[in-house]
Length: 461
Image (cartoon, rainbow, N blue to C red; front, side, top):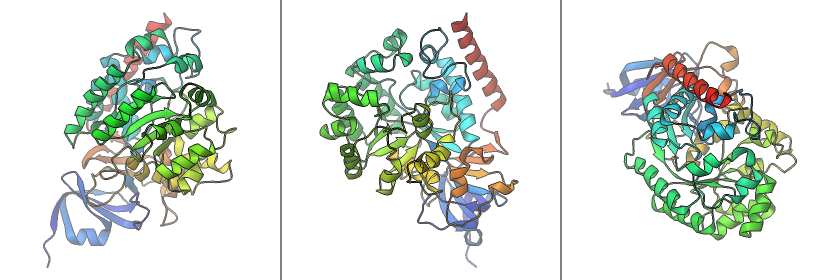
């Protein structure tokens, strides 16, 4: 009889979707985990015959999948869901998003980040990508690490020409923002250098990347410098791009080209580039994206909320079918719930006659997202050698049991609405029976609410 290999943890009796379209669906399936990595995944009888572990997690037939990845959500807005203002609110009152997002402190950011991590984990997300708007990056990183969630962070508001931002989006601009994020290349480079030091520990949960705020707020010189630093450090270059028609027109006027064309001219449009939004494109942009294959982060809820798409054409289904890696983000949770992007991507694509496959949003939030953030070799799917970021959904609900064995339809259609039972990050159990086990969840929430209310009262008085 062959001696079994000893693993740290076995996940058994699961309805396993690996996140890799080429791999079969395993039901019942099992996963063997050792030293935070996946040793084996496959039919349960095969895994149990070859592996043993002191700790076994019985999924009870529930859906098991790789941790989902949120690729565009501003942490500064996490505490303001349902607030009496929106990101579009002007500066008629002191209490608005522009004021609150620049009034954070390390204590406030730590509280918000920890509470946000709890909310994301409870919805099956195991990595949060902060798109360059957190000032207190150490407090953010420490809080995410304390809870046990992956994150990516970069310099806040890296730019050197904000005239367009000031004129086109005045509701998100104030003097305090310019004081905390003064335009200039040296500040951006210094802060990128600081954040990239996090990557010296390859097992760190929080990693740095190179972020330009985007939308024409970086000169050609700063854009090229950002691309060089990203390439030299083997990380992605990210920015907001082509969100509104006004931004596109202004960038063409000031810089001579649309965003994608300009980045290509500067040598910054490549597979290790990720562009968020990309709502307003022309044929030249589309052709370049197909040929150069940058990653795209689509926020369908914001495209609809700002009434950008429609009327502008939604190119994402076409680009995705042409082999472009598309991932999803919610952008702001002030008026949108975590996880809504998957469902709305199906609806928005259908309105243009190019409806995505029912399962596509699942892959966009797992293996495609991992590729776009530069971690495709480490996370995003349940495959041998990858880190064990695993979500086990709640089993006791008829609507949460898969119907067809070859897709991740339920994970795409329901996404954050399917209750989560257990979450592992890097092979460590972070959530169990729907509750955080790595820290005191009630205390985390109480502190975040206290910090939020104190800040709001400061501006309301």
